[in-house]
Amino acid sequence: MNAQPHILVIDDEPQILRALRTILTEKKFQVTTASRGEEGLALAAANPPDVVILDLGLPDIEGIEVCARLREWTQVPIVVLSVRDDERDKVAALDKGADDYLAKPFGIQELLARIRVALRHSARAQGSKSVVIRADTLVIDLAAHVVTRDGVEVKLTATEFKLLAYLASNSGRVLTHQSILTHVWGPAEADRIEYLRVYIGQLRKKLEAVPGQPQYLLTEPGIGYRFVLEE
Image (cartoon, rainbow, N blue to C red):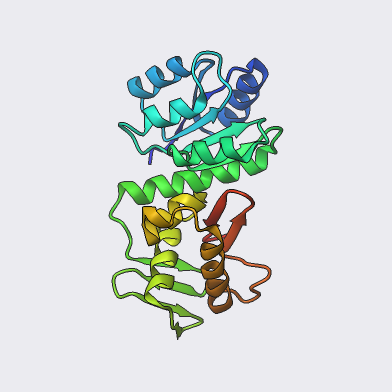
């Protein structure tokens, strides 16, 4: 990771661009801005960023298309900003490769937190992938297929472990119902959301101190789930 991480902001609202440039520069980020999708794609190719902040509503091409085209050649974390309330737009962006999303208006501290998560995820992806994931007293050994909590082994079924491993390996990212179901159970099961909820409930009972108030396995309503290493 660069000493001064590079953030590319693609948004057609001048006030958003000005505000983010000022705030992110003050936080010691290098900031590049674009007001159109094609411009953003060209800037990303010319000077690859560490994180892309992307508005879905752009004047030339849809932000979802920008996601898809970026994913043709880069795995840079993409944080989507959108005023759209329709969950289908969020799911479409995530399924096209976005890592996270924030609804407008958003709090700057929340945006900064999402950027930090994206940078950590990017650093892990660029380095050697860790086979041991730690979240407080929860330890997931991906190679040995062993999970412990407070030093005690937690017995998981093969499917439960595969589900947990996929979520934990993508910690901080919002994973859609469809992407999880496809990865864990296969494309034929991509619509069985209730099935997924049952398994998430089982994992919470085994891993969370208070299953009804999960610390690690968080629900993104109408979208999917996110595994959180830290609050």
